[in-house]
Length: 346
Image 1 (tube, helix red, strand yellow):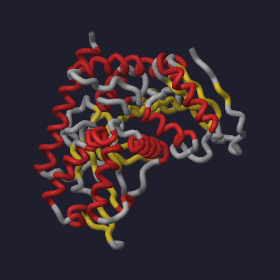
Image 2 (tube, rainbow, N blue to C red):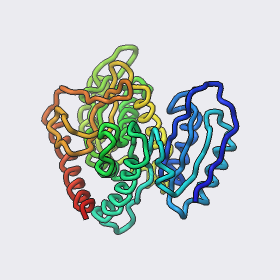
Image 3 (tube, rainbow, N blue to C red):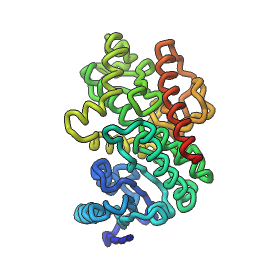
């Protein structure tokens, strides 16, 4: 079943629309995300958009409600909304794919069972991207376990460059920046160049050894601004690592508003680039990295982006404390990858 809804509003710009698919489009992250995309916060205020909403068949009635709401927002950039449960519709000629949908971990579920279920999903979506999407498509994986899901999707789409795939660690990056900003009594835009290394899991390593904080007009290293090494090496790290669980405990629902904001930040930076002298965190293919991380992984690194092309920030000095944390999260990713690849080959 595929429905099409056409928006008749005129857009002053003659810019050709881009096609953007969001999977898991009936879910709560997508509900917080779609408005921002459709009103121009991500791809620009002059960029018309065709929004494709992909979800599983039981969610189609919910998608119809989401479509009604998008229509009722009367957004001039939104040319068309296409709700569908078919990958051949969902991924056709796509410019950007935001893969939010995944199998959530249920009570009593072993991690390997979760991996097996998600390998099946991301193998299918990767193959559909390979077959139907533009070869220039930018693919962002949000659904957990995001790093390994991203690797499976990429391996299932051999005709699309590996560099076009990334996974979301921007939420962790934003959490780390915010924690430092609150500790220093400044706004979050006064903190730059925090790094999330590794897996989007509780083994991730939020690192502020290279971060800078502007306090009273003067930029200084984060360690000098915070003046509390015990906190930076202890509670700060665990707070960021476990923040998602803390939100679930408080809300009885997972992070949605903050996840959607992070997705917007991540995709906007891919589209328009990072600021001069600043880097952000993204899970990317680890091949050729200068930090001794195994190559066949999607691992979060410090990244600069220009002309829609990312590059790792190389040559940052790594102390023994950081090295141990970076290797621990890499080991978890290697284990996840090996389990997932076993399932992929079955």
